Image (cartoon, rainbow, N blue to C red):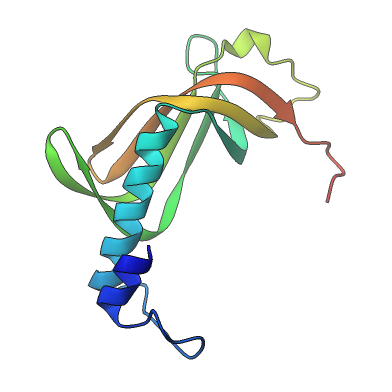
Length: 141
């Protein structure tokens, strides 16, 4: 990251450096870093903390969908593609997730690795193989 910040001319400044979210240079730095994190997470397990949607039977057990704070440009087999949304699917049988209520969401940490990822129609798709799922208590702060 320091090499990227040197290219942006901000490596020696300790304060008052501002980059807009729309900055092409910043998008490049964030995209490059995020791509390396994705690549590492296909080899090593990572933690994913989210409010997950519990899926219906026959679908991935947990799903998260949302907007990215700023668009990413990610390189993969078919070239470079922009992504402004994300969809994460956790491969666990929905039946194995006991529901404590009629709530269709679950706040939990998923420890696992990315089986595969792709960018399609502006959405970053990630499929996670879980090692463990740890629920957060309802009244935890």
